Length: 174
Image 1 (cartoon, rainbow, N blue to C red):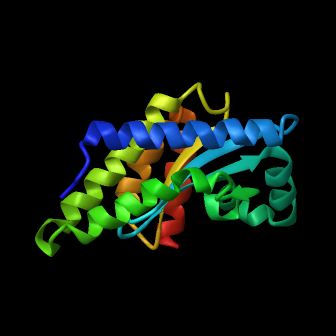
Image 2: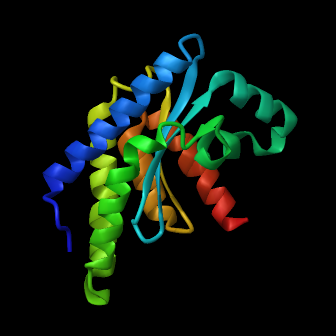
């Protein structure tokens, strides 16, 4: 199970996210950010940030109008995927060790707990990241429409969450 307390893990995620955000603001002071994400892998062994800019989003949506919402909600397609990832290096090592120390019988519970802590950490950052930007918690190689919708609902306005929910449910059915 977890080798750190949930509270300590949440604080470390918050600190790394704030450092990445500060670095982004410093390096790109004149860009308008429309998305901030944290993403993990299906085994909850790593964590990295992603940022999306309005200019990038507008460009890729114009080039691919049929996939407008995909580009909005998919951090892997964002302008600055993994920017500031070095702030998460030690945290990812910790997550890797925690996953290795978790028995198969408890792995699902461990993974769910790590993902919940990530979302809780992001919730505390609302207002500290970028005003009016969507927030996304995403997991590569993990498909649970119900959980993805719950994460987006927890992190965004009801209108944004509704847009995501409609898109994801349509995408999951198609």
